[in-house]
Length: 142
Image (tube, rainbow, N blue to C red; front, side, top):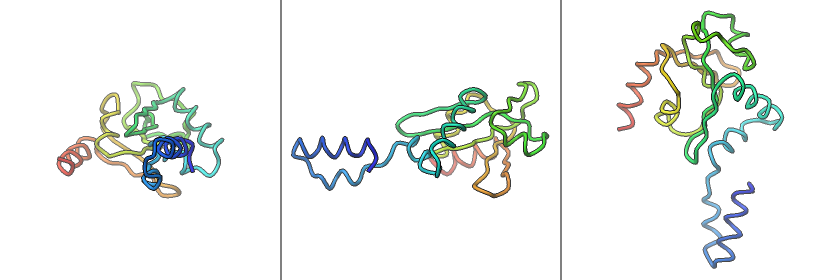
């Protein structure tokens, strides 16, 4: 049981609350992303890279880790979180890891770029037109 869930479980037990309600606890978005990593050091390494070369946003409802990239660059450079692109060369947001709704994730991006990209484990890099993606998300989440 995650530390936050244990704390809530103990609090409810001590307050006479329903201990079963504690099992409904959802991990914070940052904890959800951390759980995707089989090695905690990998998560810390990638988090550190994005704290230095990108952006990390965390709230009780959303977690986003990503950076602006130049999609014209070689794939291994784009996918290297330690590589920082010159601001005048970037054309996409590479969302490295995220948890929360699509609308929340987009809201955390500090500025718009022409493209939005991400990669699921082992798959090809997916690239979308930022404006089309934004309008689709807004239309579907009204």
